Length: 166
Image 1 (cartoon, rainbow, N blue to C red):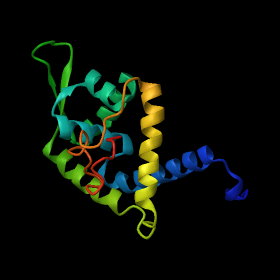
Image 2 (image 1 turned 90 degrees about the vertical axis):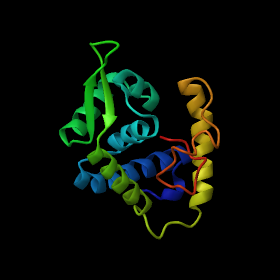
Image 3 (image 1 turned 30 degrees about the vertical axis):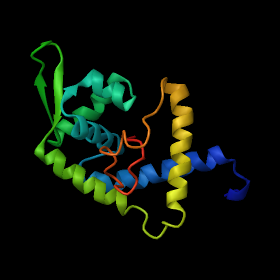
Image 4 (image 1 turned 180 degrees about the vertical axis):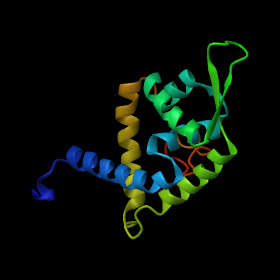
């Protein structure tokens, strides 16, 4: 393995993100969840039921990708789907009681994912938030929500109310 001190910051960040996501997905598998599923459940839990297209836009993924995520969530009983009364072609998606329980368990897993590496985590989080705000607004258009706007949604780490709901 090459010396990590020689790696560029983007490479370090990308590698660390993939490793964290893989570790989290391994833990989430026992709940029938994935990282993507948790994100969808977080949005549905915070904002209530909505059609798939709106959920896809909020999570910033393609509708087809969200469809696959929702199919897995539905297979495990974490969501319910109901035909829209306004447009019979679309379905409203909502978190089920089982999904709320799994989401609470996933939040606990996330808090305990890497115990013992808390040194500097607050500073790292602040830097990551800054990167996401800067690059996210350019990529997705518009400004990213400011602190307070996401306080209700930041349940994975409640002490960080200014963390964006990713």
